[in-house]
Image (cartoon, rainbow over all chains, first blue to last red; front, side):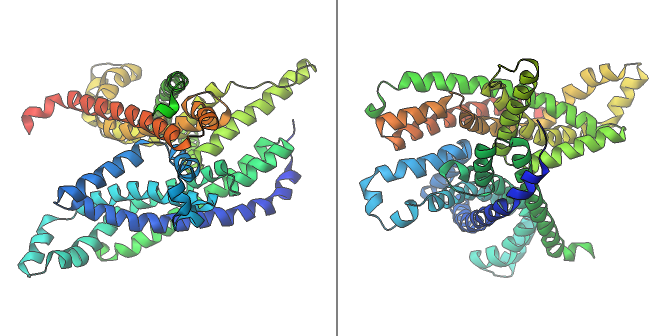
Length: 229
Length: 231
């Protein structure tokens, strides 16, 4: 057994093609997931039980089951129904890419909703009361007082969730998608050189993780600039 | 649910295998976490650097990739070693069960390292000094002073780490271990009812995580019983 450097160099171009798909999955699902998370958060914070209980159940189910099963339910399970095949969503659900984005978004939405809830609950009550004293309406208070502070509080946890999401995109290879892990698995199946290829793929993920961490670090610094003085 | 008649036994025994993977992986996770946390808190620079490398690498690599490296990597290594002894050997691997449990625990262990490190730092240094003054050895201090106090502090975050272990066990099916997800794959391809099959698996996992949540809550209550009067 030898460690074949040429094999790594030879397969790098293909691996880089995989990065494109990995990043597409990451950005699309992070974006959709965030919108979903805000909706879930507002439902969860609502005092109306018919809004808060479904939101609670949703986060409970999606946080309590493995991502892989969620992907399989959507990818293998949904096309079983005729009504899905005739719905407007079918062009998305027909493709593994669409299924993967939906699964990732639904999953990350549940986690991010909980993170955001922690941030909102962490905002000082006094600020809220001050807003009330200034005669701001409930929605004004949420938009101008709670939200900006909650964003800053939640950033570290949110950046961790984006990294989890990046790691979850690797499961795309289980539904035939050619992301970084998918490309790596195909090359290994041909060459049977797992160390070289999988470790190269791992290094790509580590670099992406580092980029995400650094990016969020800078953003956090900017959001906290008023605290430093 | 009648669609799955005849498959309940297969799914049940698959769940048993999943729980076994979970048990082994959890034990290994705690071991890696304790080792990592001890290394990070030690004064030995090499140990600190190694532990930092460990957490950075395993927290930034997808779980699936770690499992694939552990399983296929060990298979290539073991096969080449075996062939150098006996050229007739075609293939030798670590069973997927052990490769899976090891891979999962390496990943979650890197998170648990941070959980345990924080918890060890939360133990009052005065208690450790008192133990020293009483002539307790390092090991005795560790077992009788640090561990009993840190586990209470580690519990909430460790509960979340445990959920990660449970959920990662689903990935072992991709190495070919015949656990619950693998059983569901077989059931789905025969019954042609993938939605019902995977929903049942999801419910099984949800049941496992619910039991764990309740246990962690009960343990937390037990661990914090001395604080009840203070509130």
